[in-house]
Length: 114
Length: 111
Image 1 (cartoon, rainbow over the protein chains, first blue to last red):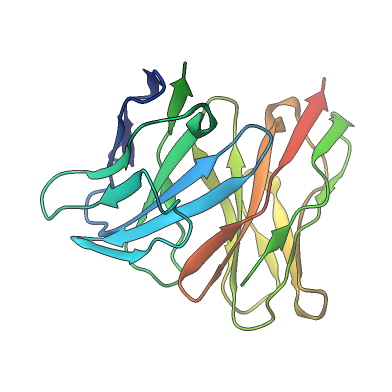
Image 2 (cartoon, chains in turn blue, purple; image 1 turned 90 degrees about the vertical axis):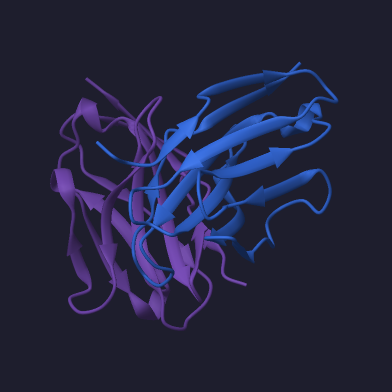
């Protein structure tokens, strides 16, 4: 099953450390989306990327968060100097194009900040 | 900006009961509509989608949804739920190439 692969599944960090979350989209998909799911809340859009380009980052905090989707390799969501409030499940989704195609989701990375 | 509302946050049903989960969106232009399901510990999976045509959409596992444009709604239904339908259900709207998700409805089906 060559679906969206996210790793790690669980990540524990101490306050002030950096967290790197990886996402490999479905083979052939060039559109990647990152979402954050806080406890008891729905998915919140963070960022939409195509290969080597950030298309829409309107949902991503201006500081400490960054995302990339290089020409080769997985998409990376990077959180610098993590704080307790960053604890959440981060989901990656991919699609074949940006229009109306459904998104395929990964299993998520559960980030816990000590 | 588009917003998606799911009014039922928690629903508890007995097996064989009928299900209807509400979903309303705010923007009235051209939209594509989806329902996703998230089983405990798993990723989101597509249940059904509406792009155009017949407003009554059939999905997997006996689910269906009806698009009512005048009400900006896309409610999810199932005539008879099973214990295995216990999950969280998310409505999503795609407009202007961006996905907006509702806050989800947790369904608990008692055997």
